[in-house]
Amino acid sequence: MFSKLLIANRGEIAVRVIRACKEMGIATVAVYSKADEDALHVSLADQSVCIGGPYAKDSYLNASRIISAALATGAQAIHPGYGFLSENAEFANLCKEHGLVFVGPNPDVIDQMGDKDKARAIMEKAGVPVIPGSGILADIDEAKAEGQRIGYPLLIKARAGGGGKGIRLVSDADSLPGAYSAAIEEAKQAFGDGGLYMEKYLTRVKHVEVQVIADEHGNVVALGERECSVQRNNQKLVEEAPSVALTPAVRKKMFDTAIMAAKYVGYANAGTIEFLLEGENFYFMEMNTRLQVEHPVTEMVTGVDIVKWQIRIADGIPLGFTQDDVALAGASIECRINAASTGVVKFFHAPGGPNVRFDTALYQGYIVPPYYDSMLGKLIVHASTREDAIRKMLAALSELAIDGVACNIDEQIMIIDSWAFRSGQYYTDLKVDEMGEQVI
Image (tube, rainbow, N blue to C red):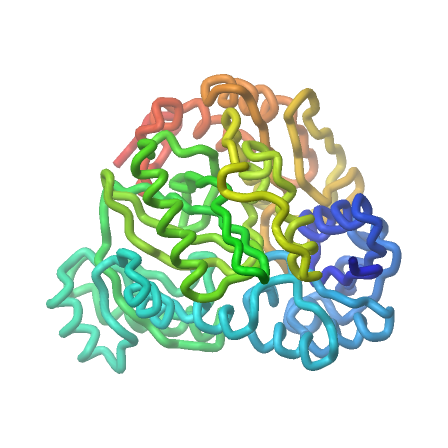
């Protein structure tokens, strides 16, 4: 097992990885920007190295400085967390070139699945159902022709990256030119790649993803599904496991499809296959070749520590369980707590009690910087039934207190307490008004 590991990330996920390493007896190295000098992950790690200025491009996206920090501190492996360089094939290759283990899949797999157009083609060859769409568009003229063929409404999507960037919903042909130009510019700024493709826009669908974990010995296991249909601007707000929308037959078919897809590309480590579910039919959206933000709900219903298994697999250790060993117990819900402002956290109280977990890097006196993602933490609960999990989440949200920085606690209470969420009859087009009722 590794004796020292560097975490190439910040915030709650850096804290999460450090805690897993401490339990495994692995020394940790934190890297940080000048804006994060007082961050929690810096104080929790055994060593810490400042790698640049506050902007991500000067620090958490600066691959050479991260590699230098790893080599200087004697780290043997690098865990990228999520975001930043976690799905960057060049960074994974750079780790390999310098004798460092990248805690994630093979760089070639990251490259293949990170290009969404290439990933669609690979999944089609593997026999995985995909949403009707186009290849990479050469120009606006080809986009117009493809739009006529596919039919409106449709989505324009960036082939690179994720997190909802470079996506535009196009309702008709007249809206296409403006959406096409805007998507290109956003994709270039976010990913340095303006490549776009189109997909048919499916309505009244659910966003359901399957967590897979695979070792380097050909073993692949599906650790259940997560329902991620509550979103704003293509960013997830609430996730739950299991999904109330899946029948046992559809669940098994989805798991089998996800395992088949992972095996087809030779996947090893933790990854997620994302699907759109329309009735009993589902279609491949994308594969995230990294740890997901919402992994805790899967941990809660399976009892599997995904982060620890990521590290073990990267060290060549085979999975210690099979698909038959995976049993989904109870229900888990996660609410993302996002900041609506920056500033000093004047007061902070995390809820407690059995099966209540708040993954965060917050503390009283912490200064929320303006340079990074707005997520302050993830509130996760687990109970024997979905109804009990909803009540537990509402109680936990009511107890959570963050003063000094505006955030979305009240909005999350509204969502969880809405008829749409309670009934399970919500879709990716869900909106919640002031009364907590579904508005389409």
